[in-house]
Image (tube, rainbow, N blue to C red):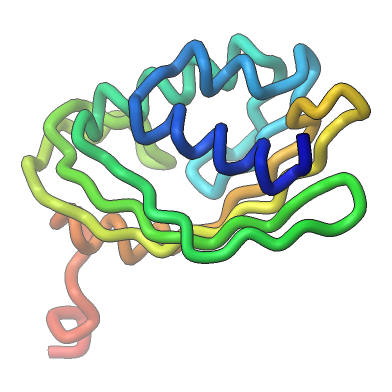
Length: 146
C-alpha cells in the first residue's frame, strides 16, 4: 500500500468517526505533535484517546482532503475540517464547554510511516487562534482592534 493509499484509508476512518480504525493506523510507539498540546502524544492508546475525545467534542466533524503528496517514507496532507463543537474539548487553557458553534479549519499534517506502513510520527498544523475565534472564545481581529 502506498503512503497515499494509507492516508486515504486513514481519512475514511476519520470521517466515519471510527476511533479504533483511526488508532490502528498508528504504530504502538507512534508520536503525535499537535498545536493543542504542550507535549506530544505518545503511543497508539494516547492517539485513540485523543481522537475519541475529539469526536466527542465535534460529533459531526468531516475532513475533506485537497492534497496528498508522497515522499520517501511519508506523506503531507492538506485539507479542511468542518464541524460543530457540541461537546467539551480539552485545550491549552483547560476544558472548553460546548459552544454549539460551527468551525471550518484549514489543516496540514506530515506523517512518517514505519516499514510496516503504520504512522510512526505525525505533525499537525492548523490555525488554533482561528478555531478559537470561530468558537467564540477569542475576539475577532476587528473586535481586538476596536
